Each structure stands twice: as C-alpha cells, then as structure tokens.
Length: 322
Image 1 (tube, one colour):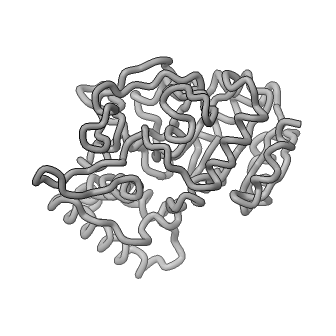
Image 2: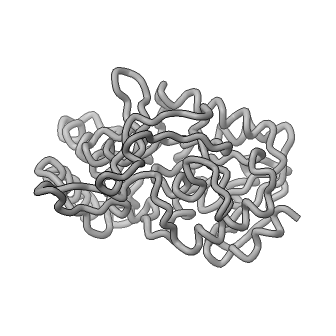
C-alpha cells in the first residue's frame, strides 16, 4: 500500500504541504480557483495556526455555510492542479499552447522509484502475485510499471483492476503514436482507492484517460483527504477488489502511508481484510514508530517489521522477500 510519502522523493507534497509552493494557473478559471483557495487557506491558518492542511480541507467539506459550499469546487480543482502540475510541460506548437508529457506513457522517474521497482520486481517474482493499492492520485506507479509489459528494463505492465483496457484518450509529444491507441494491458492491478488525476466521472460512469486532462480541466475523479468521507459509487468495485487482495495476501508492504486517523474507510478495509490471517506487515516510513503504534492498535497481534522511509529504506527491500 502506497501513500503520499512514497511520492515525496519524486517532489510531490505530503498532505500537510498541499498548499505550499506555487501553482501555475493555466487558464482564467484555474487562476480564480488558485486565488480563492489560497486566500481561504491563509485566512484559516491565521485563525488556526496549529492545524494542518487536511484539517482545513475537512472543515470546508463539512461546513454547511454558503461560503464553504462555494469554495469546495474550487478547492477540489486546486488540489488537482497542484498534484498534476509537476507532470506537465506547456509550450507553443503550431501556433497554439499545447500540453504534453502529462501522460502515463512517459518513463521518466526519480532515482528512488527506479531502484524501488527494480528491486521489487527482482525479488517478488512472479509479478502476477503483486497487487498495488494506493491512496495517491498521481501517476508515478503507472509510469514505473508501464502500460504494457516490457523486457528492458523488465516491467510487467499494469492494469486498473479490469485487465486489458483501452483508455479514453491521451496527449503526448505532438504527433506521437501514443495518442492513437492509448491502452493498458499489464498484469499488475493498480487499485487507486481515492481516485486518480487521469480519471473523470462522465454520464455517471468512470472514464480513465491516458493523460491528466481531467485534472487540468477541473473534473478529476478524486476523493480529497477529509474526515468522515464516504466511498463514492464509482470507487466501490475498486475497494471490493482491494478487500479480496488483502484476504489472500501473504504479506503487506506499506510505504509512506501514515495511517491518518481520519482515514476511517482505509482502517475498516485493513481490519476486515487482514484480521483473519494477519500476514506480516512491512512499514517503510520516516516516522515508522507512529505508524507501527497505529497499526498494532488496529490489528492486535500483527507482526510489523519496521524500515526507514524512502530513499533510506531502499537497501532493505531484499529483506522483505527473504
């Protein structure tokens, strides 16, 4: 199971840092969303200096005020822009402003992720035994595992839990072949428990794209980090698959997921999926002691093996599969 800490080495923010750093507005609406959200965040922080970003997001979500109701759509769009921006390149092409490199087909990764997946795929063979669960919205896992199997370097390819699947569309470098037939056909299920920046709900159906256009146009199918959030219908089958995977797991590797106490649905998923067999859990996290305490309260009697977070913990991957 991967959390925000897994992507920190790649430069993405942890939950507490979601409103830090700059966000480039790529449209007039994006500029309004960014300005409105950051202004509300600064006003909140002035009154609640000790609260983290997740607390602010939860209060906006739960409030019955007209002001919060008007702010919530801008806040969700802001979060999509914030997490999608590091993947995209904007430039001029044929006299128009184009966006590229924001797709799942790009193979560029940070060194820590390269080493992580090289090691996991070397020690966890066959790859068909792997299931990746993540609470992240980004596309680092898709880029690492690759949309279809490759031999050099070895990558088994991924799917979104439904096997081979043609995606709705994708942008790539202008005139790239990726644009013509975007599809995934790999063997490793990637179950994104809180949605993804390249997903959108259209006509009450979940549509998966090969790029991050839903995030940039403002309708990405993502579940923000809030207290007492309910799992939307379009995610119910993904959660069902995750529950089945947990009941058959011989080990769980948890990387950069801090088990935040507001994530009640994930607590329930882990408790119901692991309580009978109690497989060992390997935790990679810079604050590993805190995560271990939460995990042992959730699953009394579970065997937890502690590791440093990434990148320090990379040298200990082999011990997970010894």
